[in-house]
Length: 64
Image (cartoon, rainbow, N blue to C red; front, side):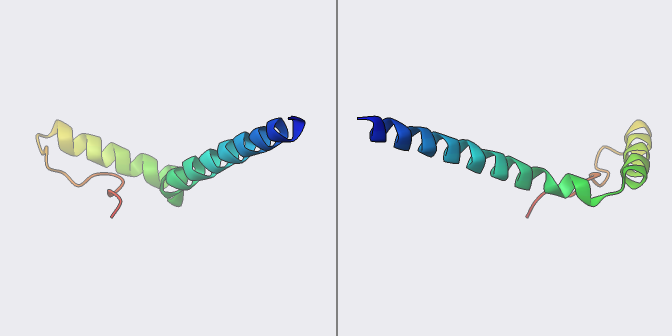
């Protein structure tokens, strides 16, 4: 009976670790830009939208 609980606990820990790895992998594209570069891109995008260009290029391109 104890072995089952141990296996269940290990499976739960492995699931949590796998979820964390997936979340970290999904956030990786955001770190491809330097903070100053990203800040400049965001400001340029904001200025374009304020000027009325709603179809301006997104700051971070969508995943393919």
